[in-house]
Image (tube, rainbow, N blue to C red; front, side):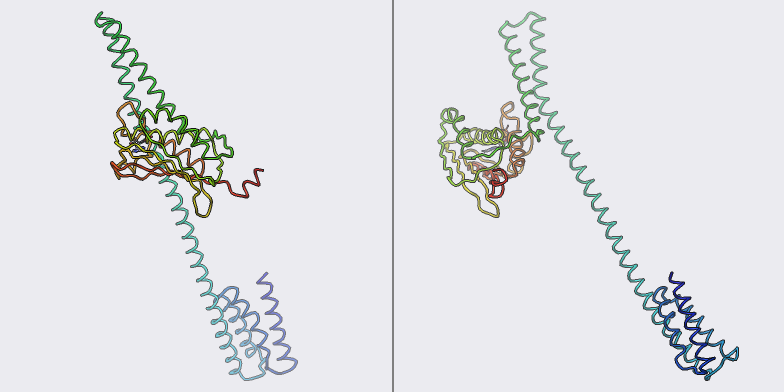
Length: 366
Ligand code: ADP
């Protein structure tokens, strides 16, 4: 297409030149037409467009060779020089612009390649982090299950030995079998809690008043609290926003945090448990619950591990170390957060934040 246009323009300019020279016998302005194909060629092909200028220059020069000379040869030489200058100038500008564009495209391409590389690396990192977590979990699980399994093997061997060698009383054999049964229960508990940790989808979300879930849990735990000599203080805000949540699972979180608090206070002189709920301020409304105890607290190092699966400071057989990590998973499923602060020997405070139902959401669910 471009070549056709150029041939057409060259044809027109040559025709005009011949017309001006042969019929009008003047050499004024005939070369002006030639700038059109020269400029266009240089704009399209850069300095390569100078070939068109060269062709037209030869043509103008040939007029003198073939006796079509009208003006002086110096005039035409000056015109030819101008062809060269104009075409070189425009061609160079065009080439430079093209080179810049190409460099820019290359930079863009490189940027895209780097972004892709970064994305792939991130994916790989995520994958290896997940694998590492999985490895840690597997190590922790095998460690946790190993304890009851070792117990079961030892008690079973004991019982077997007693029966085979006819040593020990029936009561002693029974005792070993009871211990085996306890260890089986412990292993089953670990497995069940792990299933809970992995459970994600089965939600039964409804509109909930967090205060009522707290009251139910406290009521359920109150005999144990009384037995442990724990003084409970409830300070529940009336204006707490309702939340969308799974009642049983939220109760499980409170049950876990409150039981931990009760156990943490077993060695304390003062045993006070404060449960305080209030409306959290910020961009969105939050139902915030703070549970503070006067128990043994925890060190800075322990604080970083509280929510990790299988982290426990309780005596062997008393804690699986899964309660808080399950609680964290549940609260995260509700779009909220749970964190802990405390100091060794100075008690602990667990804060649970749950997003409140906002006006629009209320209307949507109405
Ligand atoms: P578990 O109760 O089976 O040990 P959790 O995940 O519920 O597992 O708790 C992990 C650990 O966090 C506990 O062993 C305990 O050391 C620490 N912890 C939890 N709550 C408290 C608390 N209120 N005060 C001090 N330590 C706590």
